[in-house]
Image 1 (cartoon, helix red, strand yellow):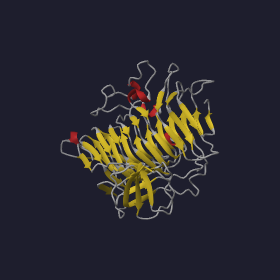
Image 2 (image 1 turned 120 degrees about the vertical axis):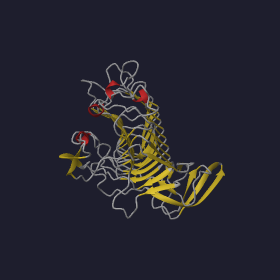
Image 3 (image 1 turned 45 degrees about the vertical axis):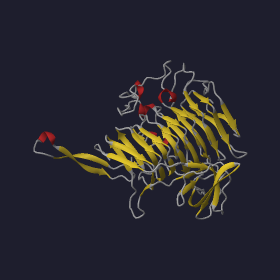
Image 4 (image 1 turned 180 degrees about the vertical axis):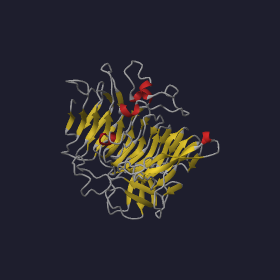
Length: 464
């Protein structure tokens, strides 16, 4: 939708988007127990149970090409029995027995909505929702399923080139050049499930259930989007993608379930050959290119091909990007390039917490990396760096990293827990790579309240 078009989709509010399993849910049984009563679930509604299998060796180079089977599954509710015997709980009965086990403490996601938008099984192509320009873009409390055309393969977009031919009115000053197709691509960029593309309105994506996308679930590209209280299941690239580094809208209280999709690779591999435009293909929960958005209170479960949370703030791509003049954007940011945005009052630069933040985000999932932080440059006078606040990162796998840093010298970790699940794992708590701050330089984590539980090594890597 462009040219001042309006998009308003408003479903009924959902009372409970996720409920915690109070017991193990066992394969072969048609029921499970969750915490709470009167949750607002309905008979005929659907709950998604995440993959909770443990001890997968995701760090092995052959993993993903072998016999991995995703154990995410959907329960269609046939009965709901709420009761209080000491604690309030609800027994959910499904229309068929569960195929897999799901662990105590994992969360079932309620994905039924009063509005259901899906790609027809008979369609030769998948739908996608894109808004650009002015107008209105608000999508609330709907289920969007099987949307998105762009995949995690290399981006290969159709290319149009101008010709010598022109068309238009007799007034030659208004003639428009004709274009011809120079190259027909096979993986067009920007065809994601739900996408604010250079939107010049304050947009809202709230209370949605996004089910299965071959690339990204929700995308804010050079736009201000409130991404709040959504459930995203099975986005192969990234559940939530903040594409340009100029995004300022909050990303809060979303539940993202990974299903093991993506290339399983990091972003440096494609950064140069694709000129920074083919990112977040590896399998992520939330991926951001900048530091201006508040990312708070999000939770992830299931299996992510690369990392649950990732910030890739490479200066060669974002330094000349201009923050758009969109209602709600802090005036101090509007119209400024990244390199001209005022940083901390003490002159130490722009950090996550300066205008946004990374606060109280959690994960209990299988992943290579829990939090991936790349290219956070800082001056030698900086004694704080960007702050990671209140993160609890639990890896169900046999291998992987809790926090991985690249080309970054300093972070403050406040109330952060990094933990493994299985015994005899090979998990590294913090892995550091290429600090770029001279001989003998080590990653700094000042004033840190950091707990490691059940990891093989607390710190490792280059200068950690």
